[in-house]
Length: 325
Image 1 (cartoon, rainbow, N blue to C red):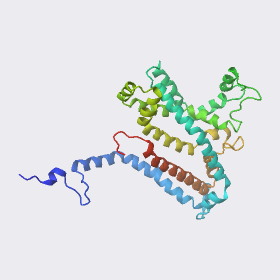
Image 2: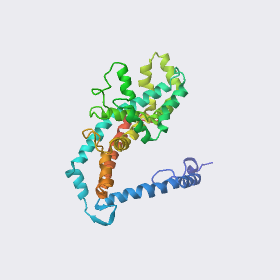
Image 3: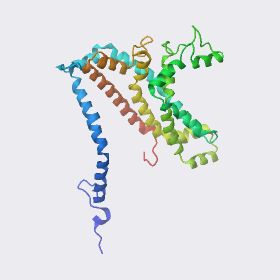
Image 4: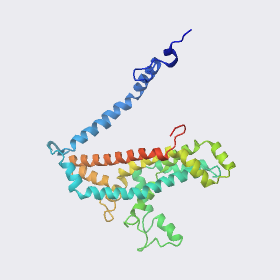
């Protein structure tokens, strides 16, 4: 008896793609229903305001007198890109800090996760709790705490360094928040205080690496460093990539720490004049809302370009199990 080909291979569309069955369409419909609250929230609270801000960037207006808005076309963009030196100065400060803070934060979070995943570590659960606990402290409170920890006269950091023979206290000591050569390290210390989430994500990825790979490598005589480079890093590279993207986006929006510590003054010597501080002052302090919208779109475009570049590069170093290259 001759079988109907459609029963074997399924009915196909003219373009050669297999059509969805009734159960698949029903499943897709229920999937859309379940995610519809998120879609509605994204549309109302994210997409519409983004489109509106793009329109605002072509107007000159203030929140105190919105009825006096005046259409200026691309004047805000021209001023931002070609006439306002603070745009490029603050972008330079932001990227300089990112180049220092990003590798330190990423490496620290990963290596602490490797340590907390070790079978030879006594009290692993206790240490995991202790490393995650700082993320529960409100950020403003944590910044104020660190401002005292880094105090040049009474701070724990300087007292500890002085105890081991490094001149840190006194007039000639280390002034972490006052020295332009140390300020980025000080801000990085504050950031490391809150890397508990990154540690937790890395730890979950490490626990998902098949143990048989480590056992086979031990039989072949591979040492700890070889296993880390050839097994651990490739297997957890998707999570490293995820943390990298989030870290880059977060650093481009770096704002709260410099604003709380010095009110966005740029102290010391303009080293803390981050781009988001410049944006906040223009939009909300000086009430230049149209110009502020232009600045917001500029940092969005820069972040989008960097993210796209990271996704393009991911094909060369991110490994997904079961993927064919």
